[in-house]
Length: 532
Ligand SMILES: [Fe+2]
Image (tube, rainbow, N blue to C red; front, side, top):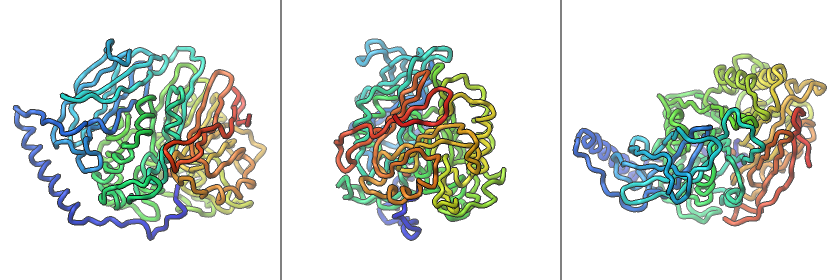
């Protein structure tokens, strides 16, 4: 989502000063030493200075027998290299059925390597389904915090209910993560993050957090080292860490993990270039290094397999989409534009052909009661004026042909209870989704819940005054709120999906009250949400 306060003139200040040049050459020297050392059979692990688990722990992508565990070693998170020597560090991991680790079920040792910024990813398999587990990491001297996670129920298990939260858009310098502080008090099976985990913009000291940030954070992110620093800064937040520690997450990305409103290989406004491809590859690598994703999401030659499917017994199947990596360039131009015929060209795609086919095949075959499409950007139509003369093209309104094709297929295949969950907009929408927006007599085929931001836009009123007046032009938008921050809690049973909009009183302080601002239900077999 573009920030309306940001203009083209703000973008592109990447200054390589003397300090950064020295840091770069220093890193090269370290790499050479490291390469030399790897050939030495007698390589000994150096002692680590300082506590290396300052970025916390996380788990993700629970299946009935597997979960992915994550940590990254950093004793000084806000400096390049994280204060860890540029060589392999041996890290032990343990998974137990109790928080005191008296009953360790799985354990092993992995190398945290400097090529991956000493991140640790372990796909632990052979676990039992539908169970709570505890995990931790250990170096020679230190232990990580103890994380808690939960495997998914088995494919044939009857699951009475499932409770999860979904979140998006957590610009660190726009506010504290008070929604995460309150979310950590919930009893959740799962957290789904729908993108804008970091923002690529430069960060200065001061701001809402009144934080002192090193000068190395001032430039926008373009290089691997700079993206790594940005992830480190975000991960130092204690409320974000706690939510990772307590719940398994499923993550996908939107634009700001790389660059505002990019589409595939195309940056906003411009054509593709080797510089942009290098920037995207750097951002993708830093994302992998810092997320509790499976090893299958490790980048290969600048590409990442991020779209994936996870099932919860007979109650829900989650289709996590990647709506950025495979986009064709915006068929009708960037930003706010009138519609155009190219938006209906069959070759214009937000997901790429392979992902679209994978999604439709999976939805068609799914035996689940609720079929969740978890993805980045607004799927429902949002006319900016009464005549539908202008749309925001970074969302599915920029690819109306593919939207119609996907929704028509969902209708034709009689997919059971399709529900789309969405991030990006820093606003809440509840939408009826139709295959044919030109004909309001066509049936509603799915429901969309768009969650607000964790912190992006802070306590400012930005989108409410801008988008609020457009809502009356859009009868399929059943609810809109522009300027509250929070998370969305969803509780599913076999009869009903209930969505609670959990809004905090402020993100200008770490502590805030949370309350349910509004609630909606979708009944089994009846697409469309009703406010309760
Ligand atoms: Fe955002």
